[in-house]
Length: 500
Ligand SMILES: Cc1cc2nc3c(=O)[nH]c(=O)nc-3n(C[C@H](O)[C@H](O)[C@H](O)COP(=O)(O)OP(=O)(O)OC[C@H]3O[C@@H](n4cnc5c(N)ncnc54)[C@H](O)[C@@H]3O)c2cc1C
Image (cartoon, rainbow, N blue to C red; front, top):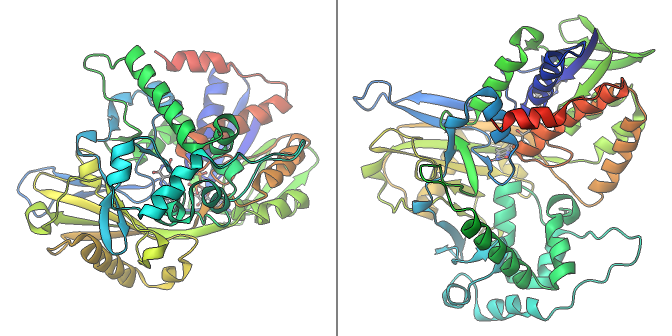
């Protein structure tokens, strides 16, 4: 039997483990062992249930996500896994009847104008009447229709930073007041460093195809509207919202994957200290002094952790990994009594641009966005602090960071009342940054990995930070190492099975 060692028990490592399990159930003679340094599985995915000790309803609780709170609906991966594992009924659309995004600008809150798709307006009236942008700013954004598209020399990769792209096409005000906070909130990335080809390649393609962001997004909106008409929502079906969560919090996903993969093959609370090759085998030394020997190795840790582990295996891979930076951040969640907060709760969240000099990157009205996140009469809010442009704030103690987040929520949104509880979740070097050159680093890593039998790297540091990307990357890693042994997996059968 071939044994695959998987390092890292986040969603990527668990996806790999579950895929190996499926491969063995298909009759392949393969097994896995997974090693996770933390005492718990899930990595960045972490959900906590907090009993409502301030109410009188038995069993009522807050569902607090410390890391991701959702996944993008347009990618079917999580739905496929949920179907395979039988928890698809727990997929949770956002409550779009209450959808509204607020943006802080010059100290005031503005509603994101209707029709704005990513960074481009696609509806005339909401755009011209919004106070979010100045008149010169709006005119400059409109010039996107006239700015010629970038000419790409043959054989050269079309890439630039998000900042350069937005300033070139839509103007600096669009970057400062819309694009930067959107990206800061979602990717926790610095637009000055961020490679567009590695993060939003569709924007580069859109420019080449339509010559304008506004025209590109208008075409996209028409396509979406036409699809909605062609495939209307089936009666009784859940609405397809932009993001989807899980009723029990995102950890439901990783818990189910760990159960399905087989917890008997998973070790937690022990870290991998080093990896060496011995002939065709991989020898992994653990922090408890023991050694694990396997026929293949999947490293599903953060890139900075993988770098250390790869030093003795392939120094070129390690060098390339050292070029993938990461930033630290924290989420701070608060429970309140609804009748005490004194603000309009009909919004999904607020974005705080760097220009506003806030100590908060963004906040989510978790219980407005996701039904069932707070017991009746209570609300759940969460703030984000840190990110690549504000790393110094992470030096503060948990108490101080919580105090800062609360003060910001009060200052920005006007929240009153005392929190019933607070929870802080720190993610040290938790957000990989896809900076310029990322695709070149990845090309080198891919070449070296392809040439090394039994080795694969997977995770949010490489080909997409989103949960669906991570799951796919874990599955691809398994296909790669099994492929090295000429074992082909019945991908389509798995896909097909997932449809039923
Ligand atoms: C605050 C926050 C909010 C986010 N929000 C969203 C969102 O809403 N939607 C979305 O799609 N994505 C979101 N993301 C991104 C997404 O959560 C991550 O990209 C994804 O969870 C990463 O999974 P992973 O398994 O690749 O890595 P991780 O979850 O980081 O798992 C890697 C694991 O490897 C372990 N490890 C490291 N070194 C060793 C070692 N030497 N030995 C053993 N184990 C080791 C670590 O302890 C860790 O558990 C968010 C991320 C953060 C930080």
